[in-house]
Amino acid sequence: MTAPLVAWCPAKVNLALKVIDRRADGYHELDTVFQAIDLWDRLEIRPDRRLTFSCDDAELPTDERNLVVQAARRVRELASDPPPGAALHLSKIIPVQAGLGGGSSDAAGALMLCARYWGVPLDGEEMHRLAGELGADVPFFLAGGTARGLGRGDRIEPLPFIGEIGLVLGLPPFGIATREVFAGVRTRLTLPRNGVSLPAVIARKWPGDNDFSFATNDLERVVFGRWPELRRFRDALLDEGARGALLSGSGSTVYGLFAGTFGPGHVVERLTERFPDWTILPTRTVAGGARVEASAEDNRGD
Image 1 (cartoon, rainbow, N blue to C red):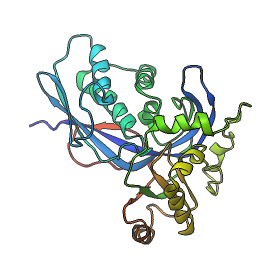
Image 2 (cartoon, helix red, strand yellow):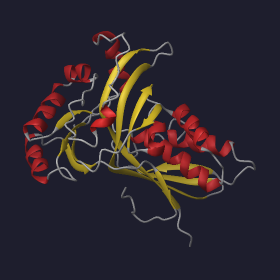
Image 3 (tube, rainbow, N blue to C red):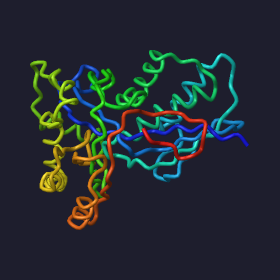
């Protein structure tokens, strides 16, 4: 039996995030640095008479509200001949409403997977356009690694990979809706209107000492004010020797960067004792993004 095609879809953290201003279209102008990490969803496609989608997370919608379904339909519409159906199944590992980009990564993986499955030739520009229509973070996951995101976060500028660095992720027992955070931005955050953005020198720091002094997130002022336990976890990471610690995206994940390839186990143990209701995971940075393999085996790597 032929092995199914599989897309491996990584999570991300934001190494920095600056909110520049409110856009006319209702979104916010952002300047951010994305980093892919070693935490993956698995999206599989198999032959079927109809186009179907299932997920092992019962809380996620499996209809048109899911970006995987939207991505599959858009690729199918571009096929020269009406292709057969397909059964897509998502094995969900990346937590939702955690600031880790799981839904966006799944959408990028679905674009790549369906294009290969149905033989739809999409060049980089067309793939990027489709990704941007699905969501602001989706284009990043087409390449992954380390990259700067401008505009809504969808204008991607690749940066040199920062190398394999250990992280410790802290996920509280609740999620945070992005829309809720940005609603708070409008009322509680004074946005700069002078074109301030992350300095270009950021791109030159990776090969150096990686001091992560640039690692700031403007959304922390809103999120930490409403959920102070996230600030406490950030401070605990710094107490444990993290080289940098901050909120990822709009949360709820808070993470720390540590020396070495994976987050240190003793830090995970101590933080688990201090924050027993949290999920605390060691992981690392990876150089790639979503990718498709003609195998059902666990070959994530980087």
